[in-house]
Image (cartoon, rainbow, N blue to C red; front, side, top):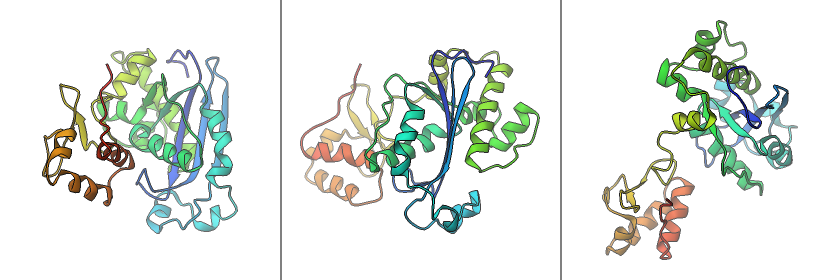
Length: 263
């Protein structure tokens, strides 16, 4: 990569999965390319046995079938290699802020692992692309790199294309910062605004969690817990298909512990 000055390794990564639910769906292929500050690359690419059937609609996207992963390692078996590739590195992906990273974190949690993201910068080529030239990865490769993306929806082909597109974006747009901290802020404009990935709770100006949906839209979490039907409403959410991160916050609130905004 010629247009980003790396202070530490940058890890590009891409997942092919059984679906789009970041809390419940499973990885069927993972590819990671670790770029060192001196330009050297290390590549990790593996099919993954999701320990369950791959839906036909997912196979229609990436072409990976049950028989392709039957003898592949499970994610738990790959966990240590994956964690080593991500160790002490910044991140890059295509739609990885909203999809690949949270799904990867869910898989790591199931496997007893953990990805420490404190101080990690995360660049998302899709967010830059959609801000500048709204299209998909194949169009981004064509537009920025001048060639067709061969093997789209193969995780390794996608992650290599993503890194090439990201590098070309920095060369094309003078208004884009070359500094990783500023690029991280560009790719994460809402960082710290919401408490959960599905944006059901938002911080108020006073630093209180506030509902953004439902019959208590605009009410604080602590206020809802004090209402006669508030606790039953939270218990209803816990029994429905909401994100696990939201549910964790609500469980603590039911126990009298409320999140406080830092800073």
